[in-house]
Amino acid sequence: MSAHGQPIPLTARARGPLRGEAVIPGDKSVSHRALIFGALSLGETRIAGLLEGQDVLDTARAMAAFGAQVERTGEGAWSVRGVGVGGFAEPEDVIDCGNSGTGVRLIMGAMATTAISACFTGDASLRKRPMGRITEPLALFGAESRGRRGGRLPLVLTGAADPVPVSYRLPMASAQVKSAVLLAGLNAPGITEVIEPEATRDHTERMLAGFGATLESEALPEGGRRILLTGQPELTGRTLAVPRDPSSAAFPICAALIVEGSEVRLPGIAMNPTRTGLIATLQEMGADLALENAREEGGEPTADVVARFSALRGVEVPPERAPSMIDEYPVLAVAAAFAEGKTVMRGIGELRVKESDRIDAVARGLEACGVQVEETEDSLTVHGLGAGGMPGGGTVATHLDHRIAMSFLVGGLASRRPVSVDDGGPIATSFPDFRPLMARLGAEIGEMAPA
Ligand SMILES: O=C(O)C1=C[C@@H](OP(=O)(O)O)[C@@H](O)[C@H](O)C1
Ligand SMILES: C=C(OP(=O)(O)O)C(=O)O
Image (cartoon, rainbow, N blue to C red; front, side, top):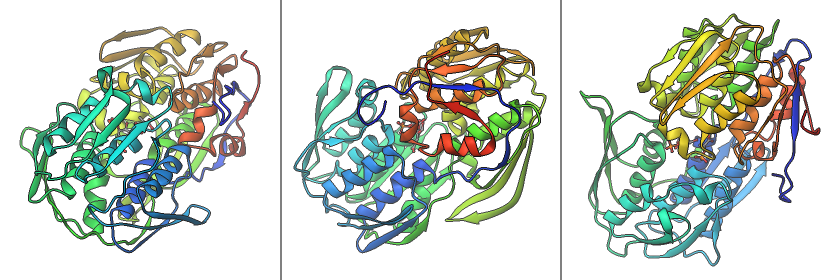
């Protein structure tokens, strides 16, 4: 939806090859964390390349409401003067995190061991998402919460006045839950331990260490990781550059692979191994993907990605890959519609609690575009139609989900008939530049009535 709440229907149609350079904005996960960790530090944090999507802007506003001085100093350039660990002030008004699960969950963790109360809410999508997975571990520190039935937002959280450190084994693979527990552990005396059954994105661990926290992380023999955080460190503001978002890069990459004659170069994409599952899967599908100039930027491995039109073949995506490609399944499913043979994605039950139920949204969208699919509670199978591809011609319901909107618009660039989405407004939450960037590559995505 637009800022005024009106849906913005968009239609994508085939118009020839995509060519050129795609300069992807900053990583959303790192951007949220840069603002939150800056707010929990003493002194100034200067951030370059911050993603200026609505999700991150909502987190910036929230950090100001908790007492940090947050200032935009240029394009993607932000300054945060923090209040230190345990220094959050009580916000005077409701904290509205918009569409952002990462924002609300990490902020709840960050305030849970400070003796203040805050009321959190979000848009219609965020108000449907489970928050018990956060409030339950935060209760172990001594925080109290009261929300709607099923632990939904709006929710009031009162931080523990005398927090105790905890040992917590995550019941699901979730970097948001892991991060909320670690952030709460910052203001608890002693060691907080988090055990994750499967390794998830590790930006919190890497970045907290960079801000001065003492943290140890070890791989477990049975898979997963054990993280030990020493509470009550003095975090110090720092200068950091946000690497370019691999989850946003996924859209032009997949578009180049399925639109005949395409070649797109994407400089400096983050290649943190906890985020590269899509690249591995596409390579197994036969994608012509080159990774060049591997280097380190802003503390994260990066590389230039070159994606060229490819004859893809269906694969089985192993369940253990889910955490490292979690947000990329919708666009992978669309690319799989252009592959020869079937693609089976297993162990993806977490997709049901994202901005939308992504298994259902993708399955219904592909059906609307003439593609046969099968779903179970935690899997999705796409019957690919080969390079001749998806018939298209349908309108896809996006359920306030940016990734569903962008995935199907990518599909429309290669399908036989145009593909429409009912609402492209939420694209602004993570990739505000998506349409102009795709247009510069030669894509036709217009604001027009559904086909
Ligand atoms: O920690 C993060 O920044 C994120 C973690 C993932 O969510 P879960 O922790 O719910 O899997 C991911 O889907 C989200 O887009 C960003
Ligand atoms: C799941 C996502 O984000 P969040 O959980 O932060 O809303 C996403 O960006 O795909």
